Image (cartoon, rainbow, N blue to C red):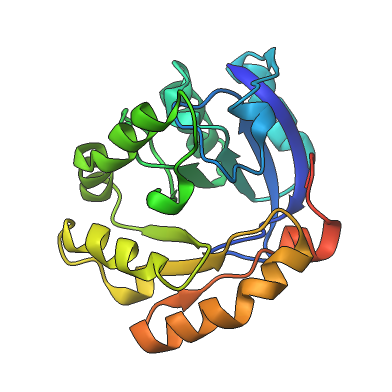
Amino acid sequence: MLIAETFVSLQGEGMLAGVPSFFIRTSGCNLRCGWCDSRYTSWEPEGERVPVDELIGRARGGGLRHVVVTGGEPLLQREIGALTSALRESGFHLTIETAGTVAPEVVCDLLSVSPKTSCSDPAGRWSERHRRLRSDLAPLRLLLQRHPDFQLKFVIREAGDLEDVRGLLGRLDGVPCDRVLLMPEGRTADEVRQRAPMVAALCLGAGFRYTPRLHLDLFGGGRGV
């Protein structure tokens, strides 16, 4: 698999925020979000080829129960099914982070999907492809059917983004409000703090959950956090 990095940290976002976890970050993505905070896995993908067996060994060496497979877009990796099966067989609790634009067969304990809305659209030559991929919800519907334990995390830049979120949810089948999480967009803790009150107010009004971004608050972002 093409791997950008592996590391131990606290889960920064979502229902398991704060849980010590071993992270496997794949490299390569089919989207090009304008605000991407891991451009070394998307716009300018970096990494090395690492066999599945070695990744399992690294995860065991981390000494933690929880493993997070993230990216980039990990579901693009040809070996993703083999990796997730091996992690499950090794007794780990597994979270997969995905944008939900592809739907290969995988196993996980928590499917963490970050559907992209119009606030993610880039300028330039990637814009049309990005919009087309993020607008196709067929893979996401299939993933949600297969994985009933899921969360949907939406990045919010401004209050108007809530209409995009509601529009997308309206195209899905009865997603419970407690499975929908809103988080402030930002590449730094300061940027997140500036948007946090607005996002919290949206959550209160819509009945959605607010998710922090602890890795930015605690470690300042960047690689290996």
